[in-house]
Length: 243
Image 1 (cartoon, rainbow, N blue to C red):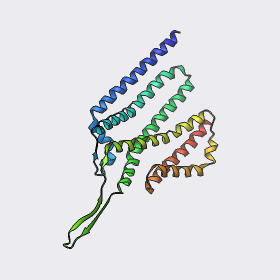
Image 2: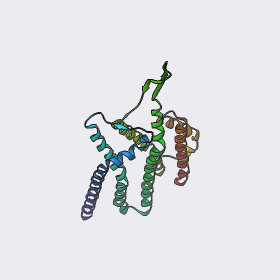
Image 3: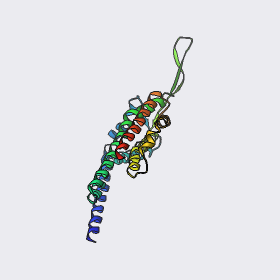
Image 4: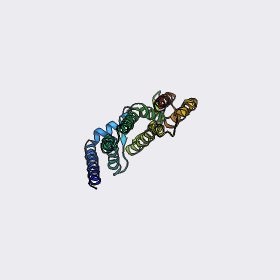
């Protein structure tokens, strides 16, 4: 009974640490809101664009959403660490190695998703969406150039944040597919022969997923498709060790 009480106290303490860290991180992020907005909007700002807000409360709620997003991204490694510290002492050495492997894999996939999305996908997506701006000119009788029609874009900060959150959520789910595959390998539910004998379908799935996520830009689609197919090949390689 004392052991159960000890574990419950440890669990309460770790939950308190996580909540306290999340609140502290949130207030720090909100205090540096200008810097965080610049970091989040950099792929869009570098295209010589600015943000506007059209309602009185729009900027406030958007800054809260941005602070919450950055708090979540920064607190995930801390939560994984506490989960590892709480569960690992009760495992055997082989189970510890397995649990540690999946924690490290999740962390690297999570970090890879953030880096690939921020530096590769988001600039290409925003550049494609801004290509729909239209501007035409006409020359009058005095040979002066006058604008005939102009369709320019000014982004609402709320719409921008919602779009970024949706894209990151979708890509995060896709990047966690290898983790799910490794779990199926570990539980003997899936065998490496399923991937090895269907490589051509994996290539087709990679192209379809890339076409579904990114805009119709050939370079971006091929880049993302190569990443997905490389991940599939890596899963085939790792599956050999499981079997």
